[in-house]
Amino acid sequence: MRAETPQTTLVVAAIALSVVGATVAFGAMVSVQAAVLLLAGIAFLGAAARLALPATRVFAVRRRAVDVGILLSFAVALAYLGLTTPLG
Image 1 (cartoon, one colour):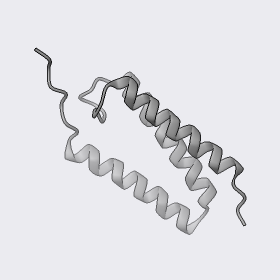
Image 2: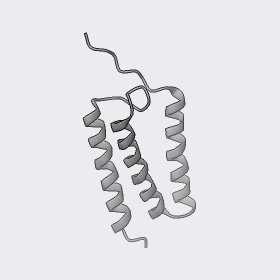
Image 3: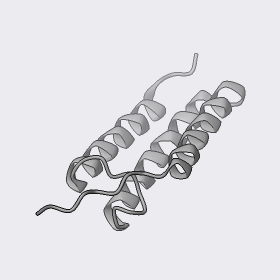
């Protein structure tokens, strides 16, 4: 029998949404390029957390390898766009 993966708590989800929202607000007020690079860093940290921490501590939707792969791909794409897109 397979054990059920615990669901993400409401507090963890609210914190994640708050961090992303604050980063978007930072991008609107200060620098879009810096905000995109910050989002890339957040995605990388999310991948590292998903890889290192048990499922009860981080978002656990799919298998660990799928989650880490998606987050790392997202982080690399955001970093590339943040470093190569001209600002004006």
